[in-house]
Length: 381
Image 1 (tube, helix red, strand yellow):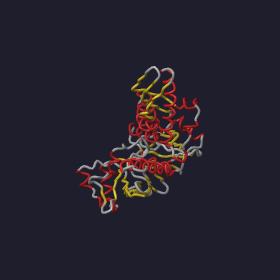
Image 2 (cartoon, rainbow, N blue to C red):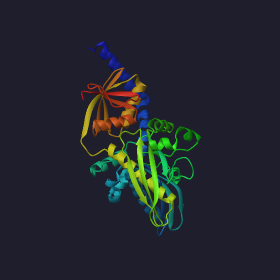
Image 3 (cartoon, one colour):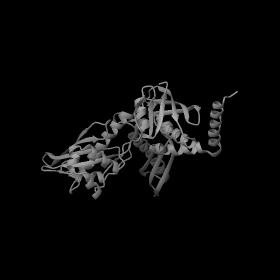
Image 4 (cartoon, rainbow, N blue to C red):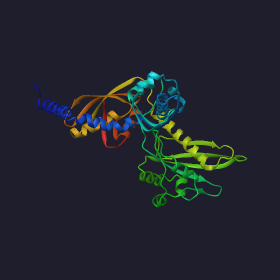
């Protein structure tokens, strides 16, 4: 016979699963929670332009090439530069299997030409399995944005807000991109000028720069100082040092971009924006890569306040990229005991939990890694 506590647990568990089944609350909430993550596996704006003997053949060739180009962009988004090349090697049948859906916009045809704009949605699990089978480490955890502070070093002064600053203009002219680390260019309005001076930027005034980042809801700033000089007659070169503030896990970056003969500053800075984005992305992926390592499991106790709160927290846990499975072991009105299957170590998992406003806490050592809104306590770790 059940004791009163056991009856309470069973009653609450029955209520939860009855509501989930009857109302679809769990499924809809989970799907909503996952939508932002799965958007990482959507590649947009692939331009198609193909000629062939007939428009139908041109369309077939264009869609085939477009889907491979989309996978190349996805590979670029999820993997470090040293690990790329799979998109060029994957066979057509495998590529077709990876594609979940396509959307074609702006179609135009002639007798021998086909033009369109392609959006490709890939199957997340199929892509993950391909990378793991191929031994390619990948990351899919999207960082909170960074704010770039583009300082231009001239012979006699540093330039941030005053014009001309082609280094700042280059960031304004290149949107944040489609990678895992959004880098936002500041607006440069009166509010920005009041919050941050060029002297505060180059001195690394951490309090001022952190407050500046908060205006853009960014996790920190990257002060990028660019120096331009003539390396050879009529050939410009820019050396850039980027120093993070408020980003303890990130080191500094240094890049150099040499222009072509006669190439002017705006074009060189445009390329420098891309190269700096690439090294920042590579750094993030190295820290958050999911390799084809063995799967680990641990049990955790999750404090909850009710059904809606539990559905929300479970959805958050399921969205963490390193998490491969979440199983409910026991459920009461105040606590959910779960078994979490994941790839990679607990330190990396803790960082991933933070991104989804979760604390991963070791109850035995009383070590709290992060401090957002919900607590997940390790049980018997």
